[in-house]
Each structure stands twice: as C-alpha cells, then as structure tokens.
Image: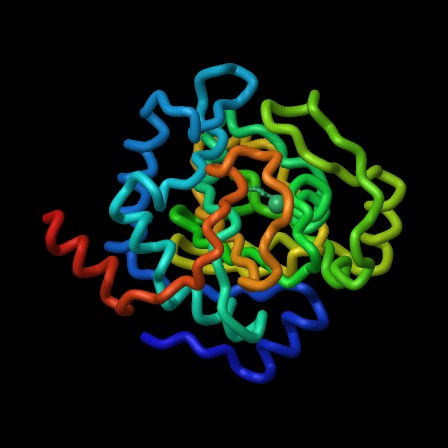
Length: 265
Ligand code: SIN
Ligand code: MN
C-alpha cells in the first residue's frame, strides 16, 4: 500500500492544520505494536515516564532504540513518506513516543503546541517539523481523544507558561483566554477512529487531551519528524526525549512490519 497524499489532502492540511487517515495499518500490525508497547510499559527504564501515581505508564520515549517492532515502525514508509511530502524534503526523527493514556488512570495533556516546546526547549529554528500519530487502539469519545483547534497553527508560536505541576510531565501550556479565542475562531475537533488510523498535525497546531476515565486504554504512537537542516541547536533535554541524530530517515519496505509479525508467530 503506498500512501501518497492528494492535492485535496495537502490543501486540507495546510488550511486546517491536520489530516485524519482511517485504517492505514492492518490489525495484525497494530496488535503486534500494542503487545510490544505493553512489554515496554512493564519495564523499569528511564524512557518510560509514569503518571503522578508513580505506577501507570504515561509515555515511553525512544522505543525505536530498544525494540525491534518500533525500530521498524520508525522507518515505515506509511508514516515517513507522507511527512516528507508535506515538509518537502528529507526528515530525521526528533522525538518518538508511545502514549498510553491508560484506562481510568491516563491523565490530561494540557493545551499546547509541540513546536512551542521544540523551539523553547530545544531551539529548533523553524516550524519545519510535525507529528504523525498511529492509533494502536480505537479512539472514541470515551477514552481521552486528542483534541485539535483547527487553523490554530496559523497563529504562530503562542505565549505559553511552563507547567511543571499539573501532570508528571512538564509542558509549555497555553492559557484559557487564548484557547477560548482560538476555539471561537476555529472550533474544535477530536478525530476518532479504529486502531490502524493515522492523524497528522502541524507543529504549531494547538492540541490537548482530557484524562481517560473510561475502562478502555488509548495507546497512540507519535513520530515527531523534522527537516534535517532544521535540526535542534540546544541539547538541554535528554537525548532520548529530543534526539541528536540528524541522519535522514531511510524508509524500509512497506511489508517491514507485517513480515516481522510472521517471523514472530
Ligand atoms: C501530546 O500532545 O504530545 C500527547 C497528547 C495525547 O497523547 O493525548
Ligand atoms: Mn503534543
């Protein structure tokens, strides 16, 4: 399966700041990744950040460096090529994370812009970077869906405060008055869909997600990809949070994950 975005999709991404693509990965692929995610969450390692309860996995960074399935996913053409297409050239992996948003215990991600974080913490020169996310489980109205403010990416980098208290993970967050104004202008969307769906969003798109009070986990993998020449200039955060290898990603074959499923069986 090749994934080439149409002109209409490129226009939508440009106008709205995001694109939702349902059913891109097969159940066998997402089942394998979900199984591996749980193995990773169970590990006691620095890359796995826990919620405030000190127990529930919140996010696992850099799994492409220590897990074979994720090593392949990080070079998967169905994820990397559409981003190369949008950013218009070669990309490197700035950040890679698996967000658990666990049933009952998965905590909020406050309103923020990712590029706001990348520019303030990592001195990434320009917003020539973005996310592509893969749902490993169905995302519904119940399990803490990601919310976007359409068109908010046009506002550039907004003022933000460094919130080190609300959750276990510090974040540059945007105040309520700004959010209210942006929502008045752009509305709100929460792309929902089955495991295997993708969502892509501009580095400046304002987003967040509520806590998960449902009995359903909501595991999503995020690849944050950046144009190679736009690499970060400051190495303040650990390298497993903000990577320092600016080598252009070379895609593997489209079957790189499905063949691993067969090998693992
Ligand atoms: C993020 O914005 O980085 C994560 C949000 C989420 O997974 O809900
Ligand atoms: Mn984010």
